[in-house]
Length: 227
Image (cartoon, rainbow, N blue to C red; front, side, top):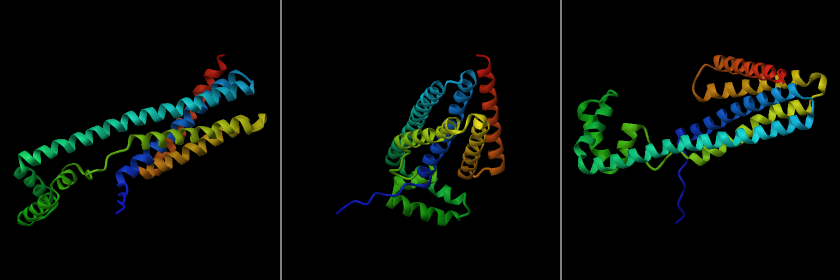
């Protein structure tokens, strides 16, 4: 009989989306930073393109490696917790059951009912119950570092394409204005998505992202004028 693969938990899906949003935002800002510095320092289109593409690749790989390391640490922690709780269930089952009962009592369930629920759950699926009530973890589901890494890498590469294509494709007389507009629209989108993902304030997230984007462009534009 073919085994049906379980769907990802909300936390797993959110982690992948988070990595993508952060990757896209970093891709936009790092690439536009290099493009502005180099674009102001030289008018050679080939040099600008090489610098932009090189930074795009470097940013994507950097985001991927960072996400992989970070999420791997989180996965290691989750697996360590599981192993620890597995041992505690074997050595101190009563204490673990009492903690499950306390979980339900803290949520308004009477002591008698909470104890009955805990006893029944611990009899059926002890490890799953403990992980869910104590750590809000679903047994067998861990954060996937590879998924986070690839999500961040592709998002960073995609985000960095916006300023790169803008500075390449726009005519010389509107090149800078067009690139600035492309960056502002891009960071507005990533700000909106990050706020929605984290249940934050959309307006503040967008304003913050736009301000950071403008500051990034200004600093690198100024650096380019020094050379």
